[in-house]
Image 1: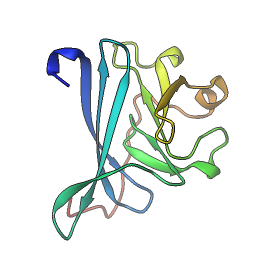
Image 2: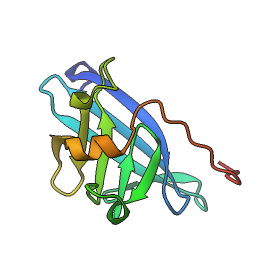
Image 3: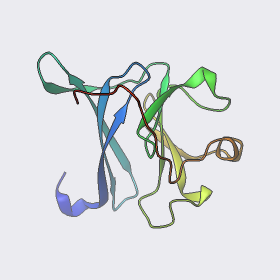
Length: 131
């Protein structure tokens, strides 16, 4: 894909439940199709390795963390929860779920939005060092 096909793109860093570091590249094309590429840091080889599944976890991209999906009502495993690329990111109509298994995107169900605050979250992880 050529750069001019993209409307916008982002690069995020996230931390899994087990403490692994993820690099998440995402882009949206003019056709409104979304793409995600997730890489996991291999601390031994000191390189990024592309992964195609989050397993039983879900990625809350704007917070930079994964969660165990079964622990939160309404959260789907192996999915990415993210806000749109426009400036109206706190609007629930601009928050989406990307299913890594089907590669389909859908709006965030209202029941999930009411229980999780996706916008302006800040997290502190004591003892996280070396990355």
